[in-house]
Image (cartoon, rainbow, N blue to C red; front, side):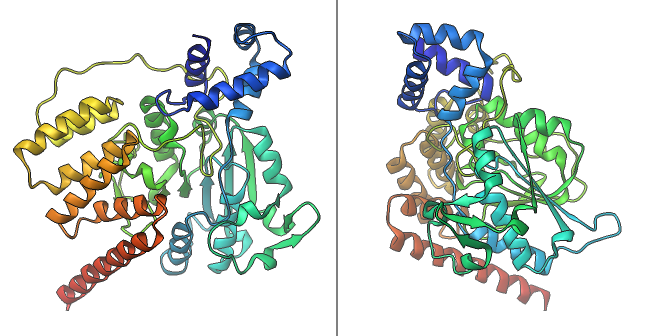
Length: 419
């Protein structure tokens, strides 16, 4: 089938996971371009795709739908400001804070980072922000810096008038803020491989969930090479399972999803994922735009199959890392039949269901984990996010209060132990 061939080509060129990409979205995008190219049928369009890198780029452009807004999710930027005011200090070797935003989409995320750093008290000369995206059109909009109300979703952003001027076209970001972000167009893998720069902070949110497991591993390995020991890596809520425990340690702040790279950590395998899938939707990035690689730059590794794993959670994670979700779920269920009180196993099974877009089953697993372990932080966080995505802000807020209370209780215990 022609659409399957097109989906496979997209998988090879931008690393898009064919199990995550929406067939309807690919079909609509291909049909739109076929009409634009004045070709009689999809077979003719498929022939053109194989011979025209320009047309393939055009297809990718309309397939990638930017989904982003200023200060998206809020909490990561709150923590960023807290980190700057309470922890980060310039040194003789690193007197300028280096930040990477990838993918950058239409600019809302890197500009939010810039504004957060300014509000934390940094002078513009004290930080540099690099932002990378595959889409020429998204970057053109980012550099222009004019946004509609859709870019200011969520809670009312009070300081908007301080940074934007309302025009007939929309809200124009001040030039002083636009100058703070260095936008670059390109394939994520090539761009990361070519740079020798080291970063204190990396935002890579909502890209990994759309990538094939092998591409995801390569992206994470590249990010790990660029992130200094002690640096912070921000990922999306559905991507936390892709970050291994060592050498990355969660900062354990509600709805923040940031990890600190431990001091002394080497480059090899630092951030490589433990699970290979998650989330749903079309090609996207930190805000919905950006692929893993540009035209002709990625050649997938040969798929390997491991022998039947032993009955343990690490084996479940290994299967998930290979994208074998159904097998991983089956093994995890078998594990639970022998270990029915394992809260960790229920959390893992819930993550697998969530990655397979079975949210009702995922919710039941997270609830079971909390029943077995009322202090299960990952289960509480996942459940709160599910409530939020299901349009239940009251339920999500109640769980978030529980998470905050849990963090305060742990902090008090630690202080009591020190005195």
